[in-house]
Image (cartoon, rainbow, N blue to C red; front, side, top):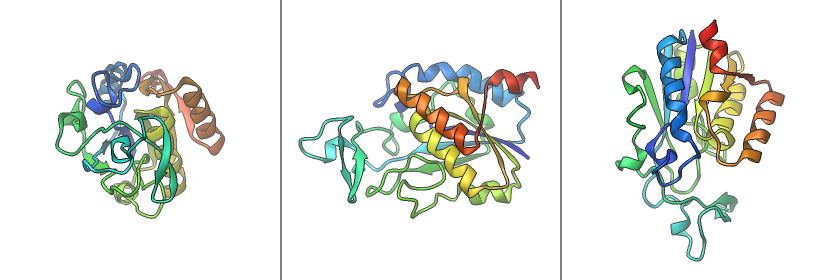
Length: 208
């Protein structure tokens, strides 16, 4: 059972959104091609789904600006612009994404007291989303990941997939993803590869 996991391909992370990843929308034609021609048995997507009072928002911390480091529940926390607030257009999937093909959507980031980069669990690793159990129930043996952003939600999702689904082959699709910081992207890819995530391109899949 081969699955494709699409990470946070939402308006908020694309140009025009509240927390845009540079060229975030450029991955969508590639992702749609993977959905159509990648030979996947299952298409799964994660969706950042924050309450409006989420503690990772700089607006909740007087004197803090977006992209400054702060603190949340006693832990260091990057302060983000308000983004992907539940039931807003910013939280919706990008309109060009082929959402009709998605079999399961895992929402995340709903607890205002902790951030959730990974599609599998909160950043403090105390609470899981249920995605790992879903993929186990579907008897997934191969999991390819892509989306936004490489240096945050994609990386942490890939690393959690390795740990929480030890019998599943996990691969990161480089050209179907974009990151926030070029240096951070390079470090994220190196970390994923060092931990055992396969690094591939869409061409490797579509050629096969």
